[in-house]
Figure 1: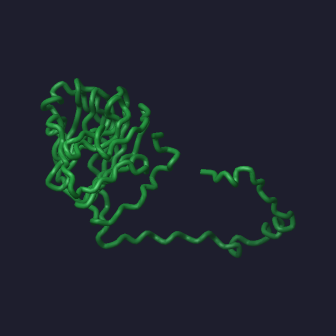
Figure 2: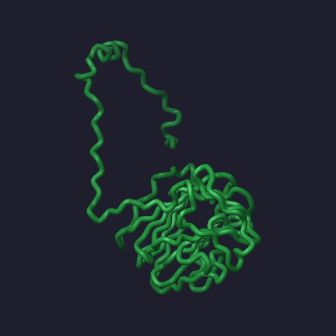
Figure 3: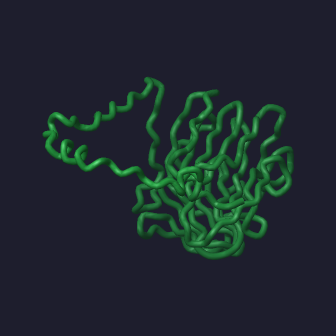
Amino acid sequence: MTFPRLQNRKPRRMPTFVLFVLALVPPSLAGDPPKAEPAVESPSAEKAESLFDGKTLDKWKIITKYDFEDHGSVSVKDGAIHLKEGRPATGIRWTGDTPRTNYELSFDAMRVEGGDFFVGLTFPVGESNCSWIVGGWGGSIVGLSNINDEPAAENETTQYMRFENKRWYHLRLRVTPASVQGWIDGKPVIDVKTENRKFSIWWEQEPALPLGFSTWITSAALKDIRLKHVDAPANPPDDKTRTDSDSPAP
């Protein structure tokens, strides 16, 4: 990003004799740039576990019940899981160990074709469950379904965002006893306290429990799915993996 006050400022030229002197200084005297100190993780820090090897579905199972009976094909290609459009839904669920709280899930998702949600992430919230809907209700709604029995299009988490087909988006979800938080391309889009709130899912999403992805009349792709345990109630740092310019316009 370029700051406005610097856009029209002309670079200052260095005098010729200074350039000549600098050219004569041996590199050993000029000094090398300081080396960055290696990052030191706290004893409680935990590295993210990959839930997808980029080659096989492994512990991911295709959902076949209820609205997933007439699902589209699910395959692995070019390091991503591809979910073809279902009638109406296509989905996969994780059959490995799944924490109920104090965890963070990150992944990349793409809406390949269609105009409805390309991420319907069903996940645990303590003893309850919830779904993060991305691109629903005509392609632009982001929110949690359900909070106090209100869907993603009608509660405090509701946001409108524009998504492009065939473009990767980086998503991150963090669940602790205190809150549920979510980011898209580094932009905070979900931050809701758990206190005095009821979390639930639609019956259609029950086959995705305890952790699963689904799409609705839409083809999508997923990759780089990672899960890690986190300490609570520490607030996560801003996600710097994507710049603000990459974030979808509201």
